[in-house]
Image (cartoon, rainbow, N blue to C red):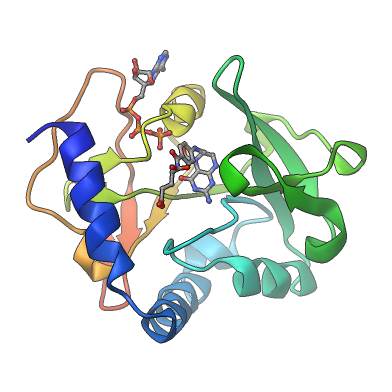
Length: 190
Ligand SMILES: Nc1nc2c(c(=O)[nH]1)N(C=O)[C@@H](CNc1ccc(C(=O)N[C@@H](CCC(=O)O)C(=O)O)cc1)CN2
Ligand SMILES: Nc1ncnc2c1ncn2[C@@H]1O[C@H](COP(=O)(O)OP(=O)(O)OP(=O)(O)O)[C@@H](O)[C@H]1O
């Protein structure tokens, strides 16, 4: 099956999850992450700001900020299809609706961070395999970004169990992830 076809199928499948299921499963996923040494040992954490039926990350971001973690979120630059990293201090004040309706740092709240500063990357996606292959929305934003990160930085996907599939088409530029956390389990890829 082609990537575009799998994307459509997975968006449809995910749309069947109720708001309650999204919130409850997201809580389990993020609690599992927070009890891991990957979270505990990380100071600078990059995380996506969830929309629609993605694993809900807003409460995690607020809790991690209270926990003293440095939180870094992506801002899309559609002209270059690149991601800019910006540290946020206040979820409510620093973000506004931007590209594709995503919550992104406001211009006046941009606090650039370099890739080398990241200790942990929490990756979004539509579908994943247990071996770490990932399918996103198709912009290639994360693939371009992940291509520039060191292998040493853990890349962890947050996903609902229904997003784990047996196989995915893989292109040479696709960057595999290291772990997947679902509401049921912790998957170590490869
Ligand atoms: N929360 C979040 N932020 C992210 C990503 C992501 O997957 N999730 N990205 C990952 O690379 C980048 C943004 N890339 C995107 C590329 C395309 C579409 C897009 O076409 N969205 C559809 C809606 C899909 C749906 O119904 O869920 C659209 O606008 O029609 C969205 C984000 C960076 N920030
Ligand atoms: N490292 C890269 N350098 C240049 N172009 C790239 C790179 N990675 C991906 N691309 C381009 O991005 C486009 C989208 O890739 P793909 O369909 O794999 O995105 P995706 O993984 O679903 O989305 P995303 O990474 O945004 O979540 C492709 O046309 C690909 O050529």
